[in-house]
Image (cartoon, rainbow over all chains, first blue to last red; front, side, top):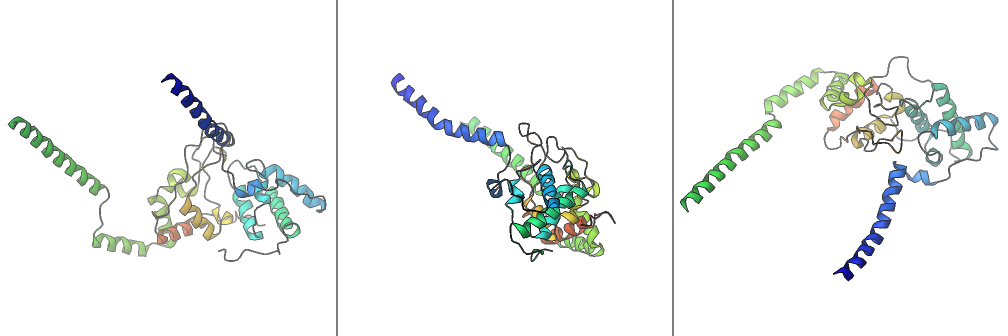
Length: 128
Length: 157
């Protein structure tokens, strides 16, 4: 009985280890990971106009407070979607995004849409 | 032997009575509306403006319990990333398109971001309304929510 019990305990410990590691990772992060979170977490703005470089810093500071910066960087939104999204974030209690900050962030995302994502300026189709 | 039969008989009788009462209770909790009641509800709905219908839906589904009367917010949700409270709804008009707002209501919000990632999960989350709320009710609710935006408060950029 004792001879069988020891391998059983070892087997259970081995099987249980990966599961506990997964749980620990989940607990440590405590939040959902989106596909966009897995992409690059910063933009090379060295060739952007100075005004946009400043706006990028604000964007990184304000948006990176609650979620990964990779999330907006790797999200494919049209200008009107960004406009609504920034306002949505701005209106969340505790976001710390003042309307003038929101405007700067939106302008940066709009510029980045055209400069990096090569998205023609304009609105999404079919949004009401 | 006879005693056994009597005991079983009493037990069965009790089960039938209690069970029957239970069924009655359940059916009285979710009563089926008569045709006259449905007709009267439709007649009442017809007299309401879209915004009033939306307000009725807002109250019917208990949205005000978390988002406050007329979407004014202020209800606490400890450790929520949104400043420890449930967001108000007075500015959804500028943050959502009609379709986005409908999707949000249908899907709800199962996970609320934590302010302190090591702290407890915020106690309140938004239930999904898919399968509960009719399309007409959803239309009316969205109409109402969009109308909550205070005049002149829109962000202009």
